[in-house]
Length: 189
Image (cartoon, rainbow, N blue to C red; front, side, top):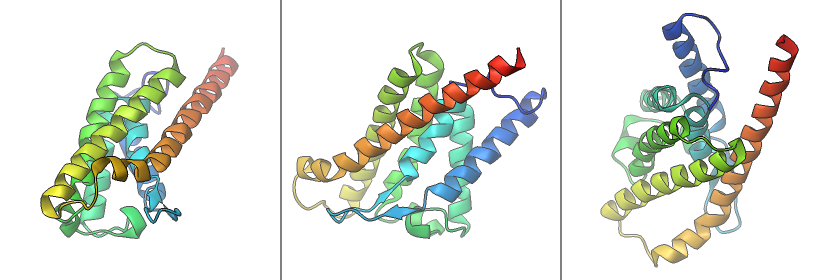
């Protein structure tokens, strides 16, 4: 967690607002990008991007950045997966994943604030927890609307490579981010 180490202004509320806006902007820009996979399941960085602000800044800023992101998508900005948007996304087949983004950012951010572990271990554990929360809520919602064909274990096997890739990318990013931050702090001293 880097919230106290990164400040844009001494004014607490202004600093938090800047962090929320930067986080929401980065999520909105990167999350909709789709990478095709051979298993037919699209791979986006959406779930990773909604978890990173919570890991970096804590649950309040993480959750607020997700709320801003969801509102932007709801009002028509193409920020959801595959550059989609609209309020109908909150009642459709994949709405559970959107609600899971908010729930996961709260859980991951709260745990990030309370756990005192090395960055790499904390990032690994919390990214896995966050993705499990998103996946659980998403699949529960999806199954409630249209029963999922096949077993959940078969679906998880198809989703696992993408989830593991996102967790690995997230851990790598956070470790590199911490090293850059340390170097910048050393230069100030």
